[in-house]
Length: 78
Image (cartoon, rainbow, N blue to C red; front, top):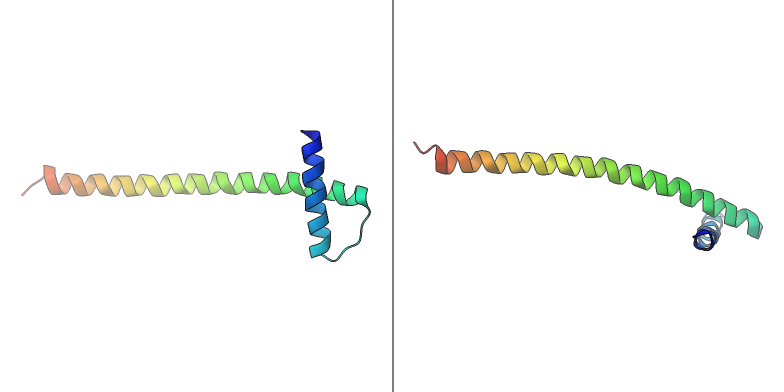
């Protein structure tokens, strides 16, 4: 697990320093990448949780609309 974090951190740090045009040493690059992976992972989890909750709300509303339509179409025939 730790080795995988170092590998991902090195790759992320390398890409980030190239994108930002910054020169750093290997240790700083790996540490920067590892910290970025932790922060990015937390932000992504929060976004997925929020979007998941919103998707659940949208699904619930669509399900309720479908049930109302079925009720009006087949149960309450006038």
